[in-house]
Length: 109
Image 1 (cartoon, rainbow, N blue to C red):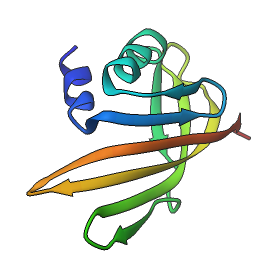
Image 2 (cartoon, one colour):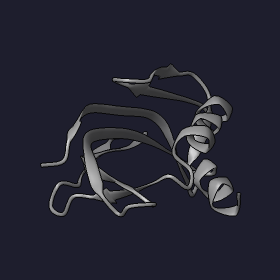
Image 3 (cartoon, rainbow, N blue to C red):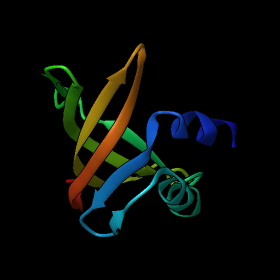
Image 4 (spheres, helix red, strand yellow):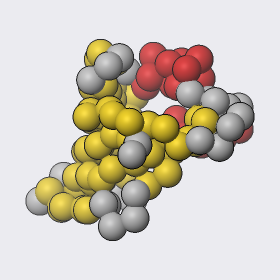
């Protein structure tokens, strides 16, 4: 729960999460509930080295993009891979994610 609270703090209350397999989630509470019910304790997400890029958005924030793999905690098998894009908004000194795209889910070969 403590890590989930930390995870939730990165997202704006009105975050939109677009997932190619799971559909759209329209707010942080629903997104965190989905994370808790489907991923928490079951999978670890690992960034693919060399895949991460950051692009600034003038007077708003930034876009991050990359590729990550999903590893099952029980078996340590990293079977899944997907692309992601996140839109970050900076308000004062705080950065929050406002949009997430998680797509191209496939086997990790």
